[in-house]
Image (cartoon, rainbow, N blue to C red; front, side, top):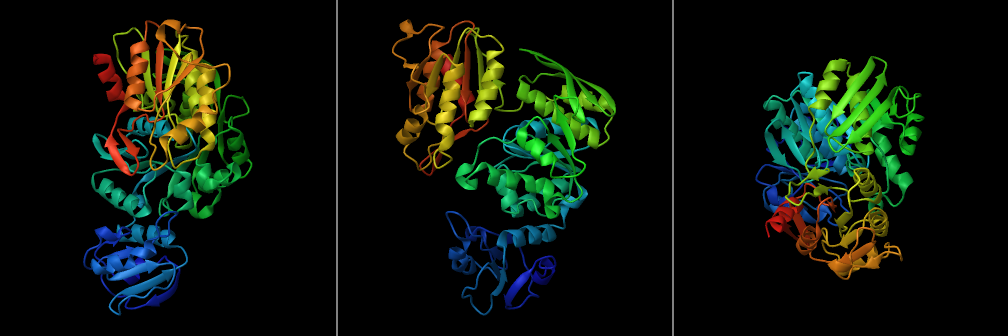
Length: 497
């Protein structure tokens, strides 16, 4: 495609070189560039793409999109724009022939619940006869075709390429998790949302956003920014304080909550180890929910999914059957079978709010005692570390503090931050013989495999083990090295020992 065609919807401040050249491919990683390609120099918090322009040119780049003037050879076309990420999103959509235009698109944002929501809505859409592609934290998949996910929301260039491929495979709908980073970095520019969903907002990514109001402002763009929201119908959890605030900022949002003033509200709710039974009232009539999911937070997710069905005009039968068929999401209260007569679950909870909601759900199951294993990621928001420790200690008889993904941060420093949240009445664990079901204890085992094995060895009939923080992840990042590590596999190994 000619470069001038790619720039049709891009605001350009300066051009040096020929705009009529043919562009073979688009890249933002200089190592992937080949002869005839175009390179986007993206500014970043750690790495600046402008520093790799010469490398891209040496690899064969014929054109460069940058945010400021740099020296390039006469044969290379330089395009200067104010926002390289926005330009990349628009140019990628054009290069791949606007694949999102052929997909009924549903975008889901919020701190917690996004992934579960995508699986619920996917089941709804399949029941309604659609062939939806899901893009999110766990994986990018279309039916049985599953591809690894590197980000919650991919970079715009990767996203448009994937959508073009999925469209060719027969996708006619898109369900996508929308992160705050994606909204700030124009990754979803080029999507035409039919429905947008807000689940909740709790402290997370404050290392990036600095404060909750900035975090909320980023999330709100999916609903308030005309360039992003378009004519989408919004479904918003009104039980969440930020959801209630968001409803006052937009017109025509569908509120979902536990109070009768909501457009979709919960009338009856009960849960057991086997799942949730509930009745919701909508403008279309009553919706009877029977779901294998557990937890009040999952009831909120189910309610939001009903809201999506309502705004899409799906029948009550389709909504009920679709949600009944939606099973557990990988790494979200995922059970691990065992012969200890104990309940073992793995969950992705990696914020204080998410961990509290999971533990509240597990406490309601009335186990003999709860053992919680968790850690916190390095090079990320430090403020949540002590909060997670306090939450774990509040609901557990034993808290085992360990490593998560330390990345380039000192693991001992991360653990020290976590331990600051352990309350004074929670004593250190000394021996199994002294550990009673009424105790409140904690222990530090920085090796995650060792921590999991230690927890499994303590399990007795009626106990409950929660391994939190990594969920579906099958890796651990130590320094800059990524190694294979899966909590579920480690639990099974420990059970076999």
